[in-house]
Image 1: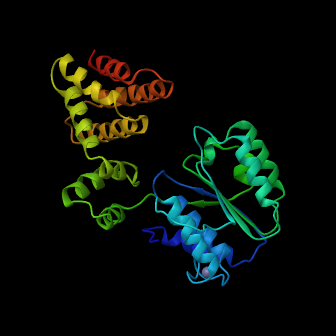
Image 2: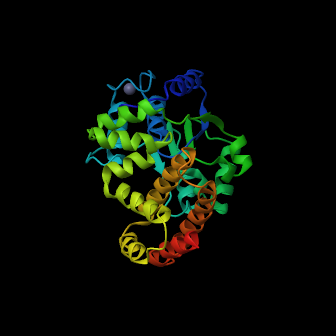
Image 3: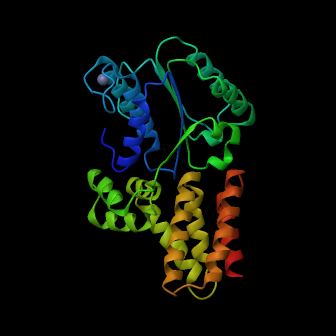
Amino acid sequence: MKIIGHEETKKLIRQYLDRNYSSYSFLFEGKDCIGKKMVALLTARAYLCEKDYGFGCGECSSCKMADNTIQGIYGEETQNPHPDIMVVSPEREIKIDQIRQVINFLKLKKKKAVIIEKAEKMNVEASNALLKTLEEPPENSLLILTTSNQNRLLPTIVSRCKKIRFRPLKAEEITQILTLKNAEEKLIKTATALADGSMCIPSAILEKPPLFKYAKDLYTLLTVEGLHPEGIISLSDIFDRLENDEINIVLDIVEKIIYKKMLKGDVNPDLYDRFIKENQELKKAIEKGVKKKLAVEGMYFNLKS
Ligand SMILES: [Zn+2]
């Protein structure tokens, strides 16, 4: 359960826990894919630890069950998760039924911890229901919301939580994480250069290296002279078979490549501006269910015109 980075943040959290309040409401804010959820899980482990030590003593029965919960969340098969830790994750959004379960869980008399990840995905009803709980937090409870965009949360929710800001990861931390994952040296270099403080792109290309190649191909098609319909047609066939979030990653990589090339003077700033706009439109269109192949081809021809 190793966390890379966030040492200062963890110290700050431990200081709050040392105040021994009966209830806590935290908002963990920072970029996607930097470890907020993992730190939230460790905070829950610390809060529930029978020895109330560090981020959990690792030896008491509560810590052992918390470890099972954490391993289960990160894809390992485990049994006997902690009954007093609840994690709420969005599908497309977080709905009121999910928040009602949280509210009932928090009514239990014993100590318990709830993590609501990507809290900005709560819909209006869910947000309003949670707000009522935050106004009168139940005793013996730890509630952590995580978000990459607090502006999309109700301001009244934000103001009722203790905000903990998570810094982006440093390049050497990204390299360290990739090394721990046994990535190849060449991939580590590429991924670290594209990371921009977060593991979203590095994790994606570690899991599926061709995503980086598709991004380079799209970049090449966008920047070589002239129109190459055959090129974009075969590339968009590939896009058509990708998941939505994989396409988002590819587009984010292209945006980063264009940005770097623009700084070097290899690419016209006008292309960068137009790409950002087209990129947003394309992501929205795909989200709404427009056929991926058509959306990508549309973007290409718009940018080439
Ligand atoms: Zn413990």
